[in-house]
Image (cartoon, rainbow, N blue to C red; front, top):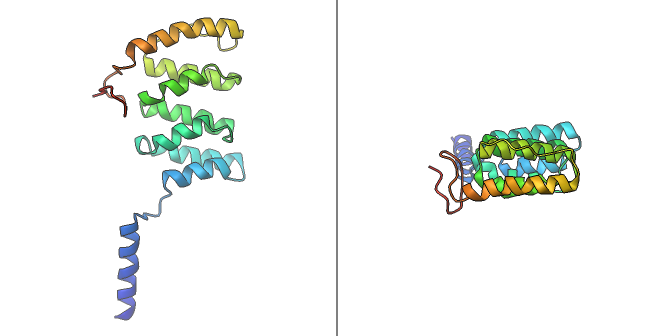
Length: 161
């Protein structure tokens, strides 16, 4: 009888603390940054991305964290597209101007996916050519900024029903 009360108490404590045995978004984000191997970081990033909308704050933070590995950053950019996260557009637009060609390329495809538009953006082009092309991309975003496509996630003032 005594042990059953202890067991019930332990289960109740776990249930009340929200401990489901699954890592939280914060725990997964920490693993994606601090795991000892890139493979473990990628696994944590994939698990975080699989959480979708509830993990968007951590996903966005990892996408721009200078300590995150390149594979983790790329996975986080994919995750914001899969979550249809309109609030990530400013971050993605900034990433299109990155020094890293891999980041620029992924950010460009992510922006085009979220905007539902194609742009002739010279990912491998000169800084001058990229700056010129960014004007058209930013103009397209500005036209849609307060009116994201239906079904997109946003916490801002725009209605994305």
